[in-house]
Every structure is written in structure tokens, then in C-alpha cells.
Length: 248
Image (cartoon, rainbow, N blue to C red; front, side):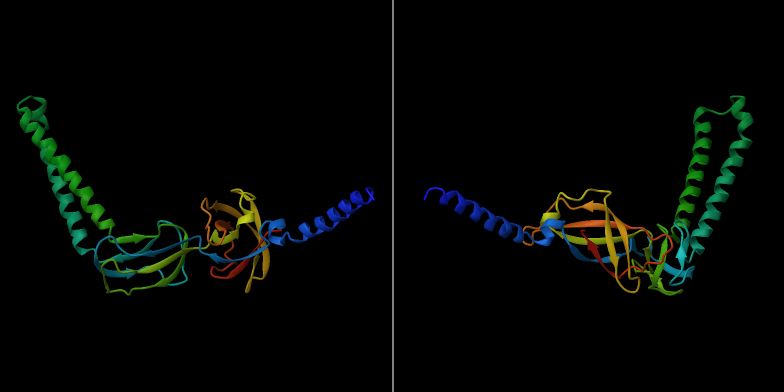
């Protein structure tokens, strides 16, 4: 009867081993299987103005592509332009006054106090010119990054005070945000490339690069977030479409 016991033990191991393998979910074996995601703009900004004023001219329309530094809209600048002219005239006068007294300075006929007064007057006048130009530049608003004008929120002649004027979005690269299950944690690294199935109207599979892996896991759901960058140099992929990450 004793030889029967090893045989029973062997049969038990064979029965238990397949059961343990069968209990392993596809997500645990593959990392995370297929996860729903959304393609979003790489960057998105609602642009307004630093100082209140009236919009004098909108230089772009919805749908226009713009480059970083390109002027998007201008406010009325009459006062600021007049200030630049005024401060420039004062700086020129201070320069001429110093030049007229230069010979007296060289001959030592002016006291140190008088010479310092002339130098200071010129420096202050030039600083006022710089200030006036800075205030003028605040009336012209430029794009902070390359992108697409998604919408216009204000009209020419409208008074704005922290009021949205336009929305600017970056379409290259695009960004993908997704939530992955806990078993996938530790299997991804920054710079890894993951297959992405882009849904309609694109309907194609491409790859995206892992840019961010959250270091905090949500204990209630057992998930963590990741961010990916999706290259879009030709602008063929629109933002806002659904997608799926393929865990392989």
C-alpha cells in the first residue's frame, strides 16, 4: 500500500499546477493587455493679457498654425507709443546736455557732484525709455509655443481684463494619458515605446514613447497613471480621438 502514496501525490501536483496557471489573468501575464486611452494636445493654453485694455487687432483666425513668438493680437497702444516718444526725447536731451558739458568736465571745471548729476540724468532717462518700451510690448501678445489656434474667445474692440482671448494647442507631439493596472508597475521605463491603436478617423496602429510614470499608486483601484508622447510631424493625427494601449 505504501507505493500508492507517491503516485497520489504526483497526480495531485499535476492537477494543481494547471489550475494555478489558469488562474493567471491575461493582464498579469502580458503586463496590462489592452487599455483605453485618449489622444490629447501636447500643450494647451488659454491666452489672455497681462494688463487690461481694448483689443485693437486680432492677427490670427481659428485654425491658423502659428510659431512660437508670433504676434497673435494687439491692444490699443496710443498711450504707450506716446510714452516711448516722450521718454526718448528726454533721453536725447540728457545726452546732448552731457555732451555740451563734456569739455568742462575734461578741463575739471565741473565739480564731481555736477558731473554725477549729468551722468545720472542720462542713465535714468535711458531706463525710462526701456520701461516705456516694455510697457508697449505688453500690449502685443505672442504665441508661447508652436501650435494651432483652436478658437477665438474675444473680438476686436472688446475690452479685456483677464478675459480669455484665444485658445492655443500644440499638435506635435501629442500627449496620451492612461491608467494601467498594478501588475504593469515596474515593467515600464521612461523612453519605452508602446503600441497604440488609434481609433476613427485614423484607424491605424503606431507607437508612443513613455514620458512619465506616476510614482503613486491608487490603493482603491490598484492602478497608476502614465503619460506618453505621440509624434505627429505631419499633423495627420487629430487631438481628441480615442485610442488603445496594447500591452503585448
